[in-house]
Length: 312
Image (cartoon, rainbow, N blue to C red; front, top):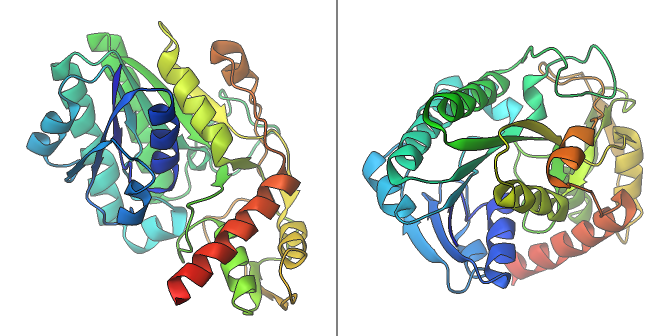
């Protein structure tokens, strides 16, 4: 089997690529390196790398040639980034996804696995969140991910291109670098390792459903190998963690705990998040395996090594 990973030099994409290569699958990576890292490609020996933009039809068509499966991860990611740069977010996530889907249809691809987001749910009406929860995104990012899903499933309905959309909750794990627009775990970990205060927006009682990247990789590959299924599925751990508890846990894995500060609640942030993952479990056998305690300890250790490497 041959697979294309758009955004394969990024955090999740590089982890998927490494797993596919270990299974003997031929991998092509398409990435413009605007947010991905060339260093991540070193973890993908044997992968064919094409530097290009998902909005460029010729680059996408060249990369997708001969592929049976496409893992579409290239995107402008994050609520805050989309609030600061809504036009860029929409251009990449909307136009880029349409370009990938059209190339997949023309190339005879069997299945496209779309990386979507729990951000399209908006503020929660019920917990845990199932896939039939009302869709009401609060940010341009959530809106763009909703478009990506709707277009992929429309291609499935109209053209017979199998499409599975994976609604990630809060993903963390090795190769996730510090980014001011990024996930709270790398922000907390890198700040604590540098001896800088951790800032919580709000009182810290808000909760998130954190899922380790290894479980996200598992979900992507199982979704790709599944035949005959299209639809949207939550990918999470099915457990809740308070943000204040997370900050204290990170402090427990660094040599010298840092101060925990509080700031005003940010626009676009939901109060609580917890996924119902039974649909993915039933449809293609998804089952999270990495617990929060062991996963967080592993991540802080990786971040410490990464921080030291960049200082050398």
